[in-house]
Image (cartoon, rainbow, N blue to C red; front, top):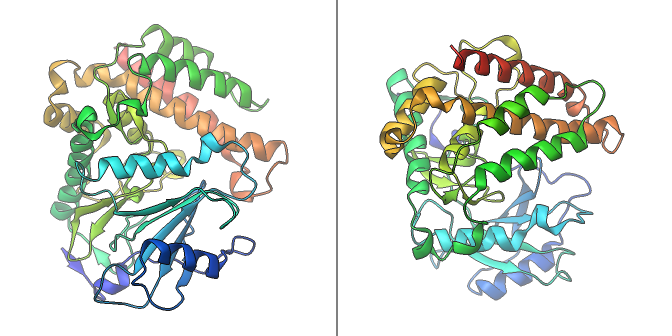
Length: 370
């Protein structure tokens, strides 16, 4: 394992605040100091570019020996109407409840429900300083194959650890709707895809029918993250294989853990995938030492103990579900571009990926029938 220019250069940092997304520094400062009165001076505010949903800022005070001075502020985008899609209070409460039983959750500072402060609800937490592995590892950080494998299995182990959290002990019984999660997801994503469909994407009728006919009973009802990717974990600067933080709990709920893994596999692009699949890659799962998708399934089933209930050969349902859900997410975004509700050129070719995911779902189904 080598790390060339030094730890500081690979730590994840924020950049300039985007035009039109500025925060009222005085209002932020006054509110945070109500929670942490020991802070001194005005903070420096920068913004993270990652993520397509909530806006995320770094609020940094001068270093002090009296406690944390480096924070993260999360708020919904401007003009948000549907609070359920950007529920800051829910995200704050989920993390607050999980923290005592799942220590890699950041420390929460407070939730502001008074919209007169910033014009919206927001929350603040302490920043977890470390490395975030995005599409590629940070420049200057090189892991050999053995270290990369350790990183991979450590990330999977943290997912398994989350799925073992005692829901009742954490006080999270109201986080989800209970049993029937698999069925609700298949029906819900079918409806959402149909509502967002445009003329240039397939109907997914065959895929949806296949999923509906084979929807299993939930294997269990546990806390699931619902967006488990490498770019939502924070790694230690002194050991980039060790997970010290897990971020972005916006979609966390109670559900089937294998559905959570299926969602993750939809983003898992390996080195031998074709060019279209490579074009979707947003995490470093292509590196030498990373497990391949089938190895991920086998590792998870073995370490979680769920291999006694579900075999790796039976996992096709969850893998196809994850891809169909990702197709639905991409299509919802493309629908907005297609109808000129957004002009972001990054969304222009999402319809191509929706077509590709349909082909890939059918390829997995065909393989499963053999």
